[in-house]
Structures are given as structure tokens and as C-alpha cells.
Amino acid sequence: MRSLRFTRNDNFYLWISEKLKFSVSFYFLCITFIVTLTLCSSLSAGIQDRVVAYADNSAITLSELEKKYAETVHVTPAVTREEVLNTMINRLLLVREARKIRLKSQLEDALLKEYVDLKIRAFIRIKDEEIRTFFDTHTADFTGKELDEMREDIENYLIEQEVNSRLKEHIAELRNNACVKIQLNEKTQE
Image (tube, rainbow, N blue to C red):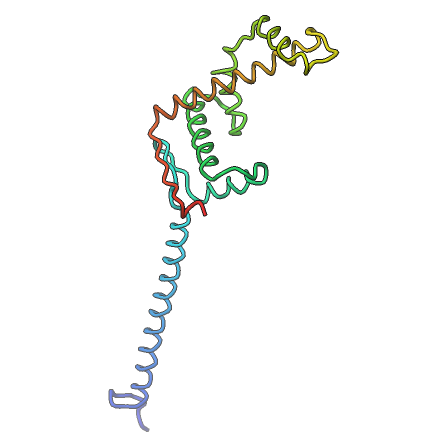
């Protein structure tokens, strides 16, 4: 009986070794292809998510800006990306300050309201003379109404004006004390 031993010269051994070489080569080719695709998709995501602004140690990415811009442009069609970016920077700085004084609100809007109430609104007092002056200079807007009827509405209006004015000053101060760098160019804004 003949032994089923194959030698190096046998065709079967050559055939198997060729198949194995092909399989190993094909396997490495597939792995290389998958790795290349993964790296390319990561690189393209990185390009889209490039940083468009820094505020101290915090960054705002292009995708975050585009998302916020898309939300804002529905409400205010004339808004620019630069305005949205500046608003994002301002919010970031205000939230950071609110966290520094250990305010606990989980929602960002509630945290900002609490911060503004504590740091700005609490220090605003409207005098009776200011309410009377406002009523007297805007009598056309209050036809048929008395000062006592409108006092609370006028006071709330004047408080909001003062809050907005002081908030702008406070944000300007925060921005002056922070390292803010904007990297938004014309290509990004298209």
C-alpha cells in the first residue's frame, strides 16, 4: 500500500501552499482596507469638527456652531454665524462663572437664570421717580390709564432694561478676563 505522504515536489502540496498564501494575502488586504476606511472616516469627521472658538480651556466646534445656527436661524433669519458663535461664547463664560460659585441647577437655562438673578437682578432697585418719569415721557402709550395701574408693568420693564444693560457690561468684563480666540473664516461661514 502506498503511503499518503506528500513531499515538496507533489502538486497537492503546491496547490495548498498557493491557496494558503492567497488566503493570508487576501486576509491582510481586507484588514488593511478596513483600517484605511476607518481612518478616512475619522479624519473626515475631525475636519468637520474643527474648533472654531476657544474660551480659556473650553472649545466650540464647527458642528456645535452649525447645530446652534440651524436652531437660531429659524427664529431669527437675519442672524449670522458670528453672532451665534459670540452668543455661544458668552453663555459658556456665564455658565463657567455660575459653576464657580457652585450654583446647582442641572439645566443650563435654569443655571443662567439663577446666576443672573443672584449676580445682577438682586442689586437693581427702581426708584419711584424713575417710574414717574417713564410714565410721563410715554403718556401716549398709556392713554386712559393711571400711573398706579401701570406702576408694576413699568417697574418690570425698567428692571429688565437695567438687567440687560448690566449683563452686557458683565459679559464684556468676563470676555476681557478670559482668553477668547475665534477661528471662524469665510469658508466656514458659507
